[in-house]
Each structure stands twice: as structure tokens, then as C-alpha cells.
Length: 463
Length: 86
Ligand code: HEM
Image 1 (cartoon, rainbow over the protein chains, first blue to last red):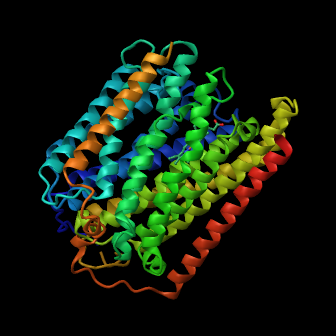
Image 2 (cartoon, rainbow over the protein chains, first blue to last red; image 1 turned 60 degrees about the vertical axis):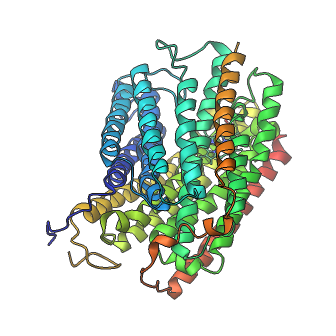
Image 3 (cartoon, protein in one colour; image 1 turned 180 degrees about the horizontal axis):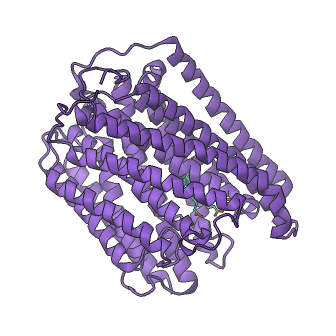
């Protein structure tokens, strides 16, 4: 029986708060995603319930998984990792907890307003103006708390993960304001092509300057720590960091190659996309050289194992990304399920895996107790890995069918029967991912609240 | 006209980046890189040794196989597009 003697340490409250936040929204976000997948299989199943129509629940799904699950998970690790690497405590746990509370209110309000049809209709920037202000305030609070933590540090050197986290939060605050055209409250948009261009600078940077640096920061912390080996090269990691900033911030127009955007901007974006191979490979070479000879040790730690798998999927995503930035490839892949496969690879396979791994890795450190059930965590790893791989394969194949069909003049409705079984397959894989989310939530809640602890590792069955 | 916003965006990003780089340079952040490599390790002093099982090793091979087959599949898909679609 679980007892209530499991007092939690006063410190790390913010990290725990964001961890629970991430686990809860992981379940909700993937359930909404599964509903979307079911609508692709049986469009009439849910009738005409306005708040459940595809056009509304798709942005509910994307916003919840990006901000509620993945970003919150990575922030959870960051709020532990940054003070720890700086050999100090978080500047203000109280402010951190206020941030957690507001973050949850914002994500819940986003889900509700979008389901009610209040949207600015711009991808990843759908939230209405008052919520935009809350998001900017939230990034401001996080920046303040982390910068003050840096200021009071006892370790003079900033490890590369600290650089990545600080860059992510400050650049996201700027990106969010500009990308959401926050100075036009009514529509949150400019008009015509200028709007598309500014939107995709933002849309791209939500991924490139928020999720990517946070996830890379966590990987740079977990891999050396779990393999008990110093980082292969800190200098190289800094080269990767500064080149990511230079390279990633201005390539958003690769989302608009099929539009009348200015050619020079398209060229800049394509060249930058190919150039992205440099910062990506710098990260991966550094991480894998650090892990070299220690793979068994990494596999023995379930958190590190998630992170390592995330790094492999990062490679897939970032080989695919430059490839489909080429117009000749995008002629087939654009607007098709190919892009949806890439999106899931990046957000779930790379950033999501690293968020999950990072949270499992720090859980014993932020609670003072072992993970409630290591076996459940292992099961979750396989569920989400198989589900993710299924997404990659099924969606890529159906994307190729769509792309080739449209290019040869086939109408959309005549292609639909060919896509049907892929949609069913995607739904089935979605069930695995929702199951993994439920396991994660259960494991997190049991570890934090109902686990008396005392064991160094293994299943908490004695509790 | 998208230029003003685009320019503001780039200037804001570059300004922050340049300022941070300048600060890092003056603050000696690029010195002592050898010690920086060890920063994630220092906190873990008395952690128990990890037992690596045979299963863990097999899982590493599985991950390598996953990486290899994923890359091959991706390469095949891109080549297929280039051949049939370009
Ligand atoms: C080298 C790195 C990368 C490059 C060059 C790249 C390139 C691209 C391109 C060109 C598109 C648009 C495809 C189209 O609409 O036809 C795209 C879409 C997307 N990418 Fe990436 N990508 C990279 C890495 C990532 C990563 C790491 C993530 C996630 C963290 C990610 C998430 C996404 C998402 C979510 C979309 C879908 C956007 C939409 O809704 O249309 N990408 N990427």
C-alpha cells in the first residue's frame, strides 16, 4: 500500500509542476489526435458536433501537444538542469509555480477557445490575442527566472545546455510577438503574402528555436550524465549552438516554395535548410562520440534510452528536412501526408522522446525517489517507438500516393479509397501512443505522490 | 510589404545573438573548455554503479539496426521521388 510518508523536497517544485503538466497534456493532446485520426477513417462517425469537427480539433491537437506536452516536458527538465549545471538553486520556485499554473491555464484556454471556433486561423499561431499576451508573459516570466538563476550562479562557466535553454526562451518570446503580429489585436495578421512569410518565419521557429534547442539542451545533459563520460567536445557543441542561431532563424520560407513568395527569399531558405546539416551533425557527432562504448550503460537507464532514440530520430528528421526543402522533391511531398510524417518525427520522435527521457531521467532527482515502475517505463518506450515508426512508415507511404496522384492530375476523391487503409494503420498506431501517454501519466503520478521510495531502482511494487 | 517586419525580426534576433556572443567572449566563456566537458558529471558523486545486462546490449544493436534501416528507407523514398516525380 502506498503511504503518505513520501515528503517531497521543497526545491524542484517547478520542475515537478511542469512534469505533471506535460504528462496530463500528453494524454489529452494525443486523445484529441486520435479523435482526428478516427475522423479521417470515418468522417461521419461523430456527426456534426461543431467543437469536434476536424478543422477545430486539429489545431487543438497541435497546440496541446506542442505547448502542453513537449514544451512543458522540456521546460520541466530545464528547470532542474539549469540550476544544477550552475551549481545553484532556481532563483524563485514561487515564480516558477506561478508560471506552471498560468501555463496550464493558457493551454486549457487555448484548447477550449479553439474548440469553440475562436481562432486567428494561422497555423501554430491560432490563439486569439488575449491568449497571445499570456503566452508572451509566460515566456517573459521564464526568461526572468532563468536569467536571475544565471546571475546568482556559483559555476562561472555556462555549459552548452544552459546556452541552448536561454536562447530558446528569449528567442521564442521575440518570435512569438512578431509571428503573431501582436500589434494587430483583431486579426493577428498582416495581409496576403507578407502575412504568409511572417507566419512561416514564426511557424518554423517555434520548432527550430523552441523545441529544437530545448531538446538538444536536454540531450547534451542526459547523455554525458547517464554514460558517466565527459562530453566529447564542448568547443564543438558551442560551434553547433552559434551556427544553429545563424542558420535556423531565417529559413521559414521553405514552407512556402509553392507560393508567389520572392525567389530570393526561397533561395535563402533552401540554402539555409541544406546548411542545417552542419549544426545537426555537430550535435549528433558530439553526442554519439560521448556515448561511444557506453551504449549498454545508456540502454540500462530508461530515461537516457529515450534520449538516445530521440537523437536517432533527430537524424532522420534532419536528413528528411533538407531533402524536402528542395523544390524538386517538394513538388511531390508538399501538402501531403509526407509532411505530417515529418512533423510527427520531429515533434514526437525527436523533441517528444527527449522530453519523455529527460523527465524520466530527472524524476528520481526531483522527487528523491526512484521511478515507480521501470518496467512500465520500458513498456512505454516500446509502445511509443513502435507507434512512431508506424506513423513514419504509413504516413510517408500515403504521402507518396497523394503526391504522385495529384501530380498526375488525379482528383482528390478518387485517391481517398487508396488512402483508407493507411488511415486505419495510422489510427492503430495512435492507439499505441495514447496508451503510452496513459502509462506515463500513471507512472509520474505514482512516482511523485504515491511512492514512499527508498529503492535505488526497479519496480516500485513494494509500495 | 513584409520587409519592415522581416527586418525587425532579423535585427532583433541578431541583436540578441551578437550581444550574447560579445558577453560570452568578454566573460571568458570560451576558455577552459576542457573543464566545461565535465560539468554534467560533477553533481553525481556517489551514484551506484549501473549493471549492464545482455538485453541492454541487444537493445543497442536493435537501435543501430533501426537507425540504419530508417536511413535506407528515407534514402530510397527520396531517390524514388527524384526518379519518378522530378
Ligand atoms: C534540418 C532540419 C529541418 C529542415 C531543413 C526541415 C524542413 C522542413 C520543411 C521544408 C518543411 C515543409 C514541408 C512542406 O510543407 O512541404 C517542414 C515541415 C515541418 N517540420 Fe521540418 N525540417 C527540419 C527539422 C525539423 C524538426 C527538428 C522539427 C521538430 C522539432 C520539424 C518539424 C516540422 C513540422 C511540424 C512541419 C510541418 C509544418 C506544417 O504544418 O506544414 N522539422 N520541415
